[in-house]
Length: 415
Image (cartoon, helix red, strand yellow):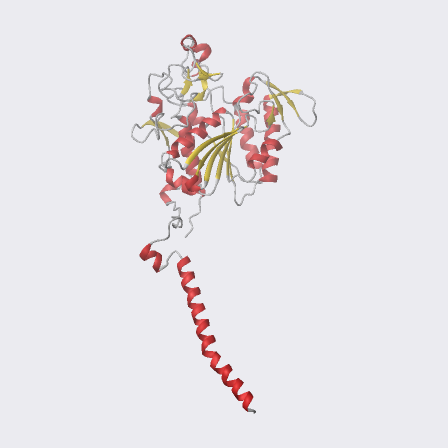
């Protein structure tokens, strides 16, 4: 071996400690960085996390908060509860429209706000707005339907908005949508106007025709593009179908035909079902369908011999009751269609529990054509009382308590 080769070997050998030290330094730095990224980092435990990087608390749903599979939350009774109900007041929620603020509009009694739904064989979980918003973190929840469904949207917004700081929440009107954004949770609660679910000539959010109705029973794409990718969809459609026993519609061609309402409703449901099966990702999206919201148009149904409506009613109906305004054939049709779906849809059967609440409609303390009723109109409740829409706070809050219970039930705790 030459002197030159020996010199080269010594130089290479002398580099080994330097290289080894460098690797140790890099390895240690990597371990430190990984530890800093960890939620269990000693540094973070000692000094806390930097601002804007606070660890998000896990959403833990306890067994007590999960309704049991064997319990039917839709069978029960209304009990007086002026301690836990209402969840909010007209004054505390700035997002209510005039149509539903009955007491502000002159209703003299407030009993309708203090009834709580009590299932026969279990309890609904106590509504926790913070827990709901944690479940909704990074998600969109959208109500789809008519003005009754809009009431449920406003109800849920009022039930959660009090925990959101000023400046971190906003309500945007982007017809046909209303969007309540919660910045802190990167979440939104939304409403989409679609009174028939499928397309119709009544799809403009504010300038829709009421008396003249034409439904496109096989068309849903214009609506569907707004629903794609929404994490939680809550559908409802009923009252707009029930104006008359028949309805003008198109199906399979542009020719307008007169359909029996139940036939038209079945065809619309099939179109909706086809959209669900082609557009919903069951791994990341949840779908609910609200059963029909009852009306209380004829007082003889609960008070024999009378000839009035829901006006001046202050207490729920006691005992068994089912009004003629709720169509059992359509009810069964919805149930059968959902049963046949390949995509899971949860039916929230709120009809029976709402049937008892003849006392909770807006009556003469709401709006007609965008204006509060005049003194003369209020003095004529037989012609002007609204026995379709609900006062808020009120019955739609219970619908949302049940929706909340189902969201808790399906939530997976991450351990």
